[in-house]
Length: 333
Image (cartoon, rainbow, N blue to C red; front, top):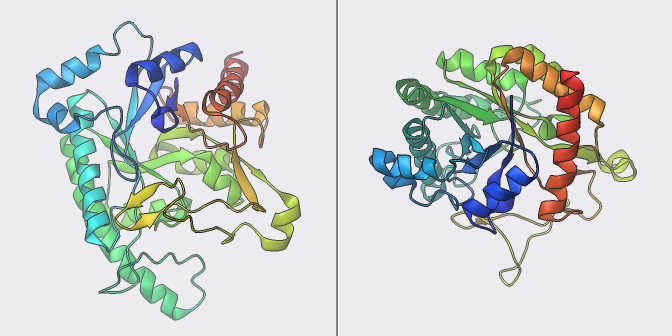
């Protein structure tokens, strides 16, 4: 099993410096962002890599002797967004990432299933969380048609390039739980589209990531080591579907998600927070998570994703890496 880091938290430094950080943590993989919501900071010549074997070899040479290898490409975004400025760009990033992965000898691309609008002519995505009424099911029927057509195309492209596309089970996507990925595969007959098992988004939905791994089995292609902490004093009042976000102003630091969409500020009284491994679930839990993944694929890539705002970039990676390595050692003992 390859243990690594998703590189977005290290976009503030060069690729060589990021590799050095990961090696210093005693980890051996780097999942490289290749488009979508974030720019391909550490692989800016991705188009050249797709077009030129010489460029691909030169990029791979940057890892020689470091003890760190590429552990997948990541282009998380919304390829089904009804605004073509966002949707078409993110969809093309998925296609380009598949081609780039093949050029680099990689066989995993991580992304999200995406989320269409709720009806023809819509300009904003529409996330149906609880389809208790017939109108909500009408929206879902429309969205699944769009999703099935796109992911059928992507499945064929991935198959042609010997790549598997792993979808993160993430909120505000049409596929966000075990039932949904089964439905997508059933609708499309996909063989090269499956799941990136990010434990964090399953935790806050009150699902058990270990149980999900064992339920989905070979549909789990890739994994993320990311934890959450439920905050009982707020969750008991607001539950986990929490819309207490604040819109950030143009004069504030904010992340563009494509077009005119921006990330909002996390609630101060949040029902749950992303935290480094061990702050939400202990080493024993992560040991069982590793065990479940290993049973599916001993060569699975498991990469830390750090979004704990209570810890600095390197500090958070150090905390997470210690727990991850302890869990791996416990599994191996």
